[in-house]
Amino acid sequence: MILTFVLGSSLWGRPSLGPVLGSSLSLRVRSTSVTDTHHVELARECFKTVTSFYNQSAIDVAAEEPSVCLTPTMLYSGRSQDGSHLLKSGGYLQQELPVRIAHLIKGFRSLPFIIGCNPTILHVHELYIRAFQKLTDFPPIKDQADEAQYCQLVRQLLDDHKDVVTLLAEGLRESRKHIQDENLVGYFLDKTLTWDPNAGYSPPGTYGNVPRVRINGHVAAGFPFIPMPLDYTLPELLKNVMRATMESHLDTPYNVPDVVITITNNDINLIIRISDRGGGIAHKDLDRVTDYHFSTAEASTQDP
Image 1 (cartoon, helix red, strand yellow):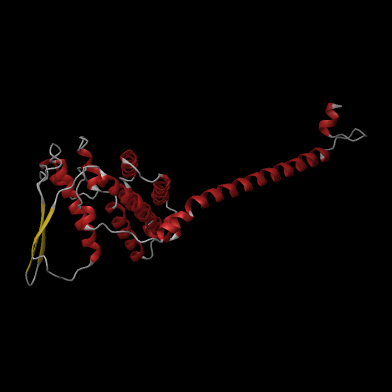
Image 2 (tube, helix red, strand yellow):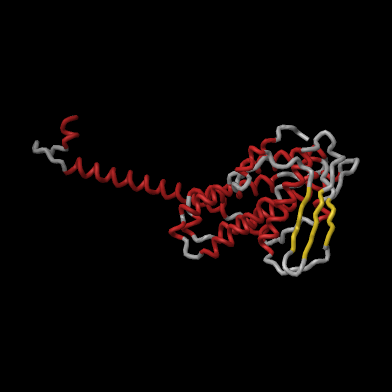
């Protein structure tokens, strides 16, 4: 009976594969149908998850808000005895960082589809989305304990994003043959470089104090210029100057020398000189100071 069942023999003893093939085919069709349905449902769930990850309404809302630029008053505000300056600095970052990151994410969405799908660029895109989620999930800063935890979160995010510029350069190099609009990509990089680093540094929140800034010379001078390079370069220089000054005076963080900005101009040139007492550039670093991602920030192992 077993042999007859397997071979599908007829009553007359002639073996027939029809019933076997028929049942097998029927079983295979049903199995494939069930498997396909499962795969389709799984794909739909994955698509929903991916879509909800990349298209979060909170990001859209934040991207519509204008960024609050750092004013000299905010950047160079001094310390207070009760530590309220730390809460003020943390509050500014908590309000501003999600907005700036949302603008960055919006920039990634504006890239041509084939460039945005590059694995390296997609990885950076995901880094910013996760950073946005972590920052917006953090509860409001109410006391110095909250501020300390928030600083730790920001430090972690800065560490996670330390290779972003290198990764973007790599991703765009990989996608170069697909780039048809150089201006679009250039604008994207300009915005990324401008939005990303400026909000990531707050001297009062890091060191508890900042050097005073004195401006002298032809302070009323006016000149035509292209905003983007200067808007990026000057804050970067001031950021480096202030960090170097504070790290060179860790023993006396509330008694540090001033940073002096001197402006001079004539009929041909306008010169902006930033003078500090931050210790200068180490001779061993002279050959590397022009490297785009070289920094001495990680060399400081002392906690202020």
